[in-house]
Image (cartoon, rainbow, N blue to C red; front, side):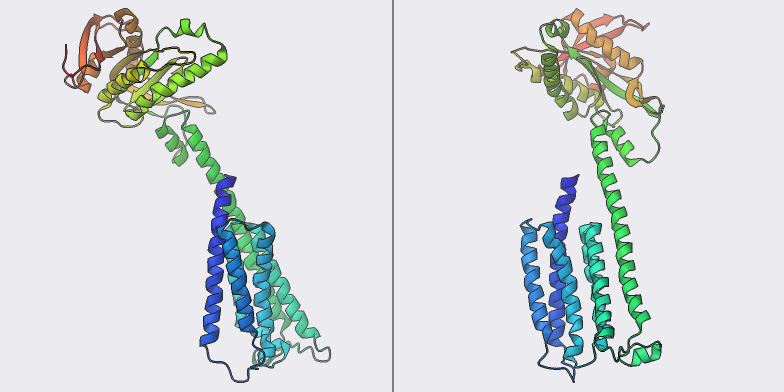
Length: 426
């Protein structure tokens, strides 16, 4: 999260640099294109020097921003330089036009102070906005103090607003209004940035949490949790026809007895990485890891029109992926797969504080029973008749194994195996 924000800050500094360069070039263009007012002292022309110095400083700063070499101290200096150059430029107006010092207090150029304060908001850090506003307010106070103290015999202070507007007199209330406006704008921007940054951090954290959540629940459930359209609670779910794929490792109990716990976990993780890839590639959703077994669904919770065919393809691809693969110290693992299609319910179960996504139904239990029947028929994949019908008998090489009774079901089921031979049924 910090790295993402830091990259955005670097990009903001580049944007700030270009805007500053655009502002100063606009100043320069206006200065050289506008006619010089009568009464101006031609010997006092600080604008070209100030503008040239600021252009040079901005170009150097922009170059460092592109090279990601802007240290914090230089950023602080940049903020102070922005305001100092602008205020010095305003201060010289009374010299240029040969007027009392109070003359510069009425210069509309002061409005550019707010542009430089707002520029600091692009970095999305409160401290730079506060520094910009603080320097501007302090600088203007010093300029007011200079006006009223340069000639102790005539401080030029008035309380008459008309006199203030029509002469070089100083109305302290008006100057304090300018300082208060600078400070208020600075404070409002600072609060807005602080709140926005907090929301940004919370958003990044929640987005990261949603990505992590997708490792434990199906993507569709994680998206619903991230969207937060409604409070997720136990009992939420849907019923639809789907295909269930249940698989585990053939003879893994005996294999695991020869391994240390660390070797066992490593082997399992390597195995899961191999067999889950074809499941995901064919549109399946991993619902549970149970020891060395995997329960996957096709068409729930994410829609998949040809779910039965995709489940069969995934099972065949798993066998191919494991065929020449060795795990650990040369161990060869084989997976047994049971596939069944039917109406199931998928949803959240648990308590208010802890929920989990799972699928339920007799069709889910049948898929698990079919996986176990592979031991009796010396096969690797067994599918139900409903899965065969939905997948399309002509698309795969099915072979009927017979009719068998399944514990917990009154009606015997017809079962098939499938392999990667050319299409057509035996």
